[in-house]
Image (cartoon, rainbow, N blue to C red; front, side, top):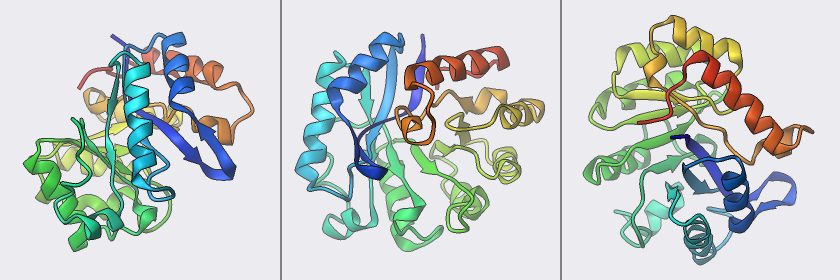
Length: 231
C-alpha cells in the first residue's frame, strides 16, 4: 500500500491555491492509496473555510485522505484545549515553527499535551531557520516520549539523526529531503523510522517539473532506498 504522510490542500505562497478536488484527482492518478494531509490555508482565512476544505478532500478521496489538524498558536488562544477545532476525526497535529511557536514554550507544550491525550502523532516542520532547526526540538521530543513525532524534512540532517538516535518515538519524512540525506539516515540504521512524505503539491511553487512527474521520480528514489510506507 502506497501511503504518503505529508500532503497539503489550500492556499500557498505566491497566491497559489490547491483545491480539494485537484488534490484528490492527483493522488488517485498517482495511485496513492492513503494520504495524510493538512491545510496550508490555516491562519490566513477563517477556520470555516479550512473546515470546508478538509471535509471536501475527505469526500472527494472516498475516505483515502486522512486529515491532520494544522494548529497555530492563535488557535490555542481561542480554544485552550482545541475543542472548538476538533470538528471531526483527525489523525494527527501539524505544527509549523515559523508561525510563532517557541521550541519549548508553553503553547507548543500544550499542543503536545493535547496530542498525547488524544493519542495523535505530531508532524513538526523543521528547516534551516534557527527557530525550527531539528535540534531545538530535542527537549520536547524527549519530554513527550510517548508521542510519535515526525520531524518533517529532517533539517539539518545531522541534528535529525541525533534526535532519532536518542528518542525512539521520533521519525522523519522524505518531503524535500535530498537523496544523500535519506542515505545518511539509512546508514545510521534508522531506515525503519523514515516515512514517505512528499509535501505534495507544494513542489509546484519551487520547481518547473510537473508535480506528478516530480512525485513519481521521488517515489522511485525512496523505493530504491527502502523507505517504509506504513506507520
